[in-house]
Length: 345
Image (cartoon, rainbow, N blue to C red):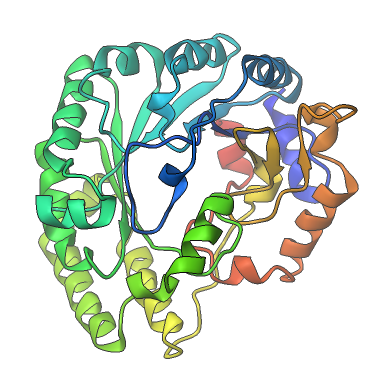
């Protein structure tokens, strides 16, 4: 019964797992300025680990599976993996940079319930500066191919110094490509846990605040947001733009807070009570931004159903609920699922 997920909200034990996030591979064909995963040899999730997670889906009543990476479409068997998770009753989503979408549009349409594409520029030059490859036209072509095949597509833009002025152009490009939803979030410059050791290594080489907004740029960003709210009112009303105006204004507050000019917006999140992230080597996190608490596949390691309720996992859930995890105060991607949302899942 899906109602078991409601029990997750009344304590620190998980009785079901509504959302399972998988890093299928840590290889990537982008060269992003905020990530250095591409510097390391690619590892793909082992078939045995995929099998273990499929079996856990039945036990834990997983409703949604998000395939991620790295670039998940570089895993040679991602379509088969996606179909296998659908076969056990999960809704399967793919988070991708979109560079391989045009080539694999048919597989995406037949294997997935939704495609989420990172779209970080409205101009080719901006996209290349952020992503390290000249790929904007290819990404938009891939989105159009997937939409023509019938699969829904959401774009997700990480706003930062290089692209915040292009919000209108990004909306127009996504809309012209026929997407179903357009979403925005702020760049993370704080977490030392997000997206694995590769991000920590990149920060040892450069200042993470280099992609944040200066005080003058925050003022300009506030003006951009207000113009977007006014000029794209119909797209907010229709739900094409996923975030309501108030949430976009909180992005302005976040960047102001990085400069010490505002308090950080308080995120509403219960991700550690509704999801888990499984990295390519089986490492387990409560969410993208909290530390590893266990690892699947090691000799003597418990299966996922047991690992979710290890003392270390429950301690992390208790700590974030009590406001004791500093990562949560600056979280750029909170996930909240209330009782109604969990039942709908």
